[in-house]
Length: 551
Image 1 (cartoon, rainbow, N blue to C red):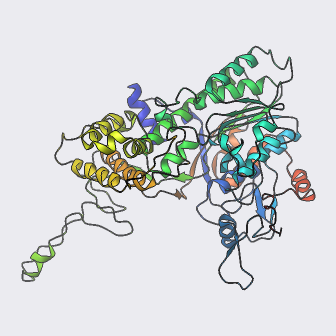
Image 2 (tube, helix red, strand yellow):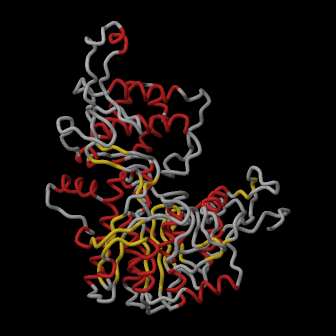
Image 3 (cartoon, rainbow, N blue to C red):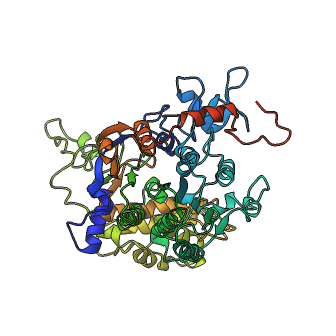
């Protein structure tokens, strides 16, 4: 958020500019799960959607027998159960490793109360966060099982917009085509143009003049593209987050009912996992635009019954603004960047040996004379994600065959001028890209549809991963933005609230407490629904393949 605000100020030329959420910050979320001090998205989202802490990997389910332990999380996450002799875990498709029970999430409570519901994301729709608001699964990786629940809800979810078309159509591994099966029950759109056409229909519908089918928008086979990559291939086919939010609000208003809408700027997390500061900033700015749409919508309609809450499942990346360029990144120990030469020391008497130099860069410290801020403009000017840039360098023959084209292309994509400052590691960057591309075999096959998905790639890894590392190092060096991990962290999350009940969110709260607050604000009673889910023995894992015995 801070990084995006600084970039926005430089882009707009206004150093006092605020993000749309800034006036509404009221507290913090403590994000631990029941199985780990660092939560994943599944457990974090379940805490908000259902008001319960659970193990990492759980989608609106909790272990049947407390305590909630790490063993349960690890076995479920890997879909493995202990072997009969107690030795190594063994794969067990379709079986429960730990007994779990489904717990009602807010969307089930809203629909039971006669409210409309909607999901808007930029990832695949069955991803952990939207899944926790719309399904029950003991393992978050059961994407096809989750997708089936999302489209087969009764009563249905009114609006579902995002990516992941291949998890709903004929590409499914179980052979089902959910889109064909529900062609008569849902309005299905696949492009930004089709979504806008439907939005204009709803806008002229004059509020529920005629019944409306549930809307399912699937705009990519996998995840939607990063915002910074939208100027490229298929950019016009995928709607921006703000456009999906505007369409969802119009559609939900047209029902004439009160409603609950969950919006996720999914790729903020993805970009931070990749330590791609440029992509992360542009995703955060896209979410800022979406927030502005929500706030403007509520204000223009003069609604006094609106509650807006914004927060993240967890922090990712451990970013820092103001990274020292002269540090030697060795985590977990103090590191001097200019130690004395060991050979020279051996030839000197004890009295003549130089004193150990002061460490000008070490983890957890700073030096006033070695850092002078960071450079938001580097991230503001980025025209490509690091992933997309690496894909092009690795997969397009012109770059693989002609090294002289690479650095100018990188300069254009990242808007960084190389060769100007001899102290910059441009030679290392160029050599790193060359080494990455040389790792490709002669018969290497690049993605046939490399522009179709930002993630979901199963080819090119031999080149793209080392190339990404080199490229993001280049961007981080120039912007002076550093990262401590490619995973999640346990730092508290900013909590924003506006409208009804905003004051009750003040302070630092456990994530599950915030979930209970939101459920209370919606006037929901989830306990009877949870009991009904147990009584009906609602499945939390897919039907086993034929011939595989059930647990």
